[in-house]
Image (cartoon, rainbow, N blue to C red; front, side, top):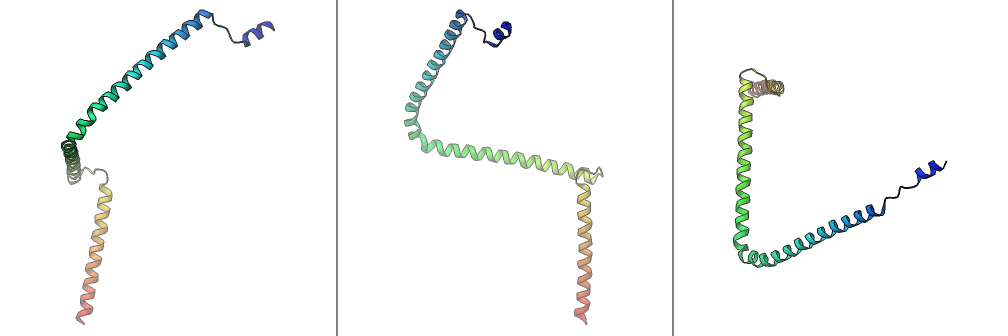
Length: 134
């Protein structure tokens, strides 16, 4: 029973381990705090230096950024249209050569429906023409 009570109690670490853990935590935390404060200070100084430059050069920078953005969008769109065109031409080549790419059956069915509707409209036109002639 005494062994059971001992195992339930949290095991105490030696004082030297606790001191080492605390020293490590303080050292690590302190060095991270120093690095954080140096980074913040550098950011504030750079912002103070860069703000007047940005205000002075903003009439040049803003249109340049817009132009670069438009150029990049144009190149991306051009590439996308090129890939789409190559994909469509590849699909059409496989369809024409009889390899039946994905969606060929739906295209054939749509073509048949279109031909059927065209015949139906032709017959209606002929009937209307006959009625108008009489």
